[in-house]
Amino acid sequence: MKKKILILCGGPSTEHEISIRSAYNIYKHLDTHLFTPLLVGMSRAKNFYTLTFTQLEELYINFGCITDNLYPPADLNKMVIDVCFPVLHGAGGEDGCIQGYLEVLNIPYVGNGVAASAICMDKDITKRLLQSHDLPVVPFLTIKQADEVSYAVASQKLGSTTLFLKCVNQGSSIGTYKVRSEQEYNECLQEAFTFGPKVLIEKAIQGREIECAVIGNTDPETSVFGEIIPQNNHEFYDYNAKYIDADGAKLTIDAPLNDAIKKQLSRVARKAFKALDCAGLARIDFFVDAHDTIFINEINTMPGFTNISMYPQLVMHSGIKYQDIVTRLIHLAQEHSKKNI
Image 1 (cartoon, rainbow, N blue to C red):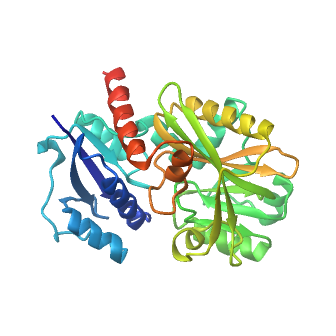
Image 2 (tube, rainbow, N blue to C red):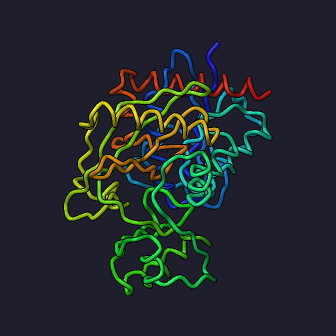
């Protein structure tokens, strides 16, 4: 008997439209010999609606969002669901909220649990926990709106006049700014605080941006490594370079790295995955500087599954077909759920 797989997309975050694009690809690659797909969209107001594939496809084509009262309401508590694939990105979907709701409903789900999702969504807490496990992170400060940390003080403490400002709980580089002057710092800091109550200040690392896909539960596997090289005058891999400018970045799969660095990256990725109690999947982003020193940039607990997303490309290049990735993640969800009973 086929398992009923709920693909949940949308959500309240600024990555709502990206979630829809990820859900479309997961639906297209679901093995219908094994699974029956169900579709539910969450509006930005956090209401659930039943979607047809035609409606999802229309949203995908038009880069649209799930509008309230336009679709039939959905009640997850009354649906027969074997596994949920909550392909939700950002706040309200990737931060432990929906995972906790699914736990209450006793629905197994793809991906990380409540604690790991919440921890990895907060870049400040993630970094502090990684440091406690002797894992390398980019030098940083964390400030709240009431704190008075000037550009001069931040630059002196971090040893760099080029800094990154990041809202701690956003994804897809939303609320992220590269600054080189006091004026840029003050303007961007004010804007960063519109996304949340804490802002991360990081030293800008001059080096390569490397990404690694991790799949598994207690014995995770790492993929080949990808490299992101911003193009068309994009200073870094920001939202526009990712999703607006079709030529905003060059993505290299199986990036040219020496064997020693590959082994180190793989070891650190697995250690970080376990240290933060991750499950199912994660994409771990690194910087590698000119001296081959590696730094963990961040950990994404529900990476994108869009046409340009690194996670599925890296896993496929490691020898697993897209359809098999989806199937394996569903099986990992069932395995993880049984262990937590």
